[in-house]
Amino acid sequence: MTPADLLHAFARTRASLDGAEVVFWWSGDVFSWAPDEPYRHLFGFEGVNVARLTEDGEDGGGGEGGGYRLLTREAAFYLDPRTREILDTWEGKPVVHVWNDPANLRLRPFPVPLTRLGDQVCFSLEIPLAYPSPLPVADYPLNSAGDTYRALELFQFFAPESVLTTDAPGVPCTMSWMRMSPWLPWMEQGQRPGGLAFHCRGRKLGSYAEVPERTRAYIEERHPQYAHAPEKWTEPNETSWTYFRRLSEG
Image (cartoon, rainbow, N blue to C red; front, side):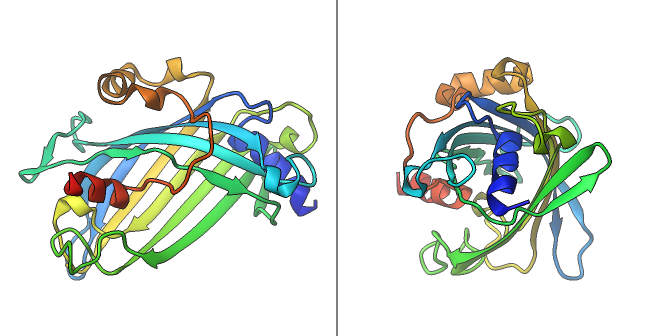
């Protein structure tokens, strides 16, 4: 398959070519690691991403020869690891949940890693990140692990094998996601060695109404716009680090 063919199949797996809103929901856990310390199960983790796919005009449009823009918002919440209730505090510190608006992605043809698994296929994305931290240590000594943000994001999207041959705008999908990251800014771990491992799994829902009621209610009460994808492309993306900086700046 050509890179354009692979992108076309992946776009139908991750979203829908007709521009319809697509909702992913996931659940999992967050573990800590540090030199000479046991691993700790710190949090449960549950989140929602609502996406809309559009053609990327800069690439001459979507489809076989072009690219796409994935317009998304995502909200995710740290949970008590035993009760699975949404946390307000952790070790006496206010918990800052994930409110990323936008969390957009430009997709252009590239050799998306594909593994055939019987009647399924798996698209794998392995994304190492390293860029100047939005929270320099000199300005945020309690909240920053370093002047360079370093993380590893590992995604797997599982779709029916027919995604390679049919013309449906979108197909069912399950997914897994793992992230290795620094300590979260609100945890106030400073430059302590170690960090976090996120381990989650989820699926593409039929609609936002299928998101668990507790999560929908939490979003509706605080930021109801997260029930829908953005209408227009905007930059830059929000992250937990930039969101924390905005909160700290008032």
